[in-house]
Length: 388
Image (tube, rainbow, N blue to C red; front, side, top):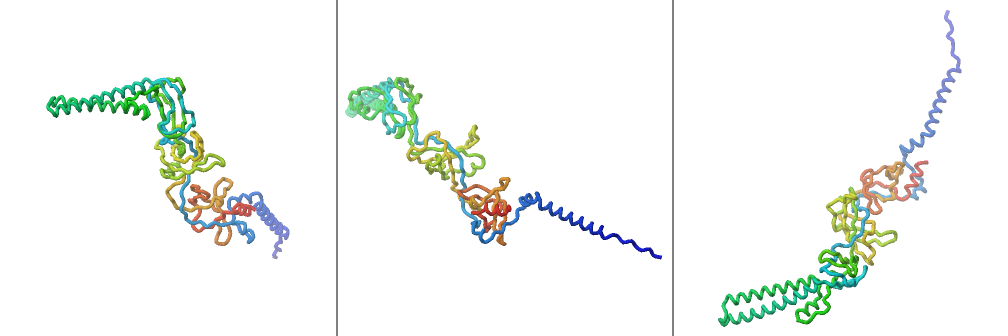
């Protein structure tokens, strides 16, 4: 006789199903809890905008463009050394009077100071004597030449007289050049040559060029040493040098002939210039290389030792993909990204690698291709929609 097979109660089956349902709900709750934003942040979804929201953004089509690299740095203003001159004492003696002050504009040859100089007086007397000797020798040579023509003297005597005249003329010319080197004015030299007396024999230190007195190093009564005592410095301030500092990768971007802009401060005028020289040496203190920028200085705006900002623009054109600065956003790790419109009309967040900034655009070296449409105006709005 067969025994009946016991049947299990229905409740346990329902209990198993209910437990499975609770587990599924718990899993769903976990997936929608605190970890959801983190997952959304690490894997951003594309953003779809309504027709009204589309009106709040602007797109830019990425295309290869020609650009010139720009380098921003700082610099220090200096005088143009090709338009400035240091004035050393041309002769020894005590200073009688200083005739100019700092900041005075002077003409070439204008007196700067007077000196009671024995060197000056000796040079004047030396020229007077050499000139008299040259004239006497020339007269004797002319006489001997006539006598030799009439067989009154020998050829040797005539040749000696001609040689003496040439030597005396050379000595006279050397004495005159000595006066010129001592900055004796032409009127005094002509008076000596005409045999007129020269009164008030004082040494005069003169401006070697037209410009502005930017340094005065002497005072009345000071004893000067010829060729060694610094007296003045005169500079033409219509042009100045700006020594721009270059570091690291900027060295390869800047070359002679590049254009530059110099900014003196907030609200000040921007002055154009050009790179005239790049130093072959590294400054041991700053580890930088100096690029000399020549700048026009209207109104004397630039002053020596002034700190300025310098922007150098390369003269060599290059091509690449550029995007407006407004298109580039930064994530929580400060990494750059842009929003790109996809073929389905949505907007995808795409990381990019940036190169140099050129004006109001960035060079993009990785992450974009020609034809991509990136969000320029409204990128922050798209990011807000994405994070909701």
